[in-house]
Image (cartoon, rainbow, N blue to C red; front, side):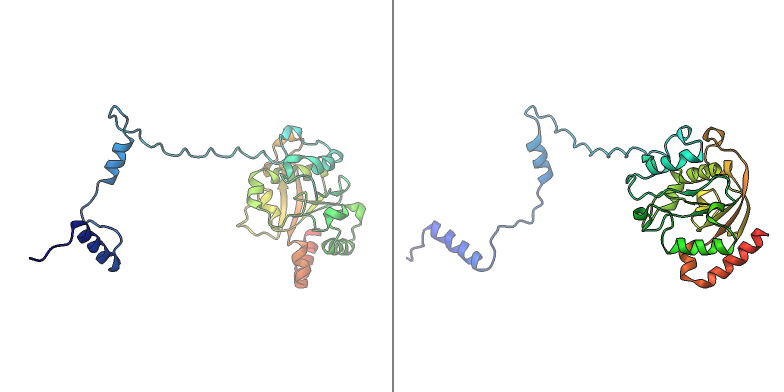
Length: 264
């Protein structure tokens, strides 16, 4: 009668066989109630069901950004006070006052010129339009028969920005600030050089007029009488910005025709 090896040896041999076949774990096709086991493990000693997992609370929305320019009632009421406020008012630019450039000129000028923003080097020179765009504007004004004392030069933004969100700036009140600025300057005519400026002042961008007969300060959203302005209109010419005129000399001819028609 052949003697059988001990049971332990038989088990060890079976395990070795499966191990050599590449099977390291025991598998079962029977489904397991793992979630139930976990729930039982987490149950209280008294057998009460475990507390339900609470959903992670939604983060609270960020506080609203302050209106650009702050409270309208605190805005400057004279053009002489506007430039210091423009250079120092913290809400006009959340990044601070560095790089801001003041407007230049006198109140009641024959022509007020508004550009979208200062040139990139203006923050260092401290003078608005001190680069190529400024030289082009000076040449244009000479041909128009206007000198430095006849013009008021301003920008819609206090400093050069790489890619401003104009829609957001309008929603946050920058157009109101610009309308207040125009009202304080009280020019006889207004030249807007840049297609981003008109929407700030409440103009529908779907309309593309080369000439605007009037712009009403109260309709631009600047706040009305409490901001120290009134509803007087000023004749406006809207044209392409100086950068585009520099890039394409043909556009200068189109601007000149518009100017001659408007200045008659």
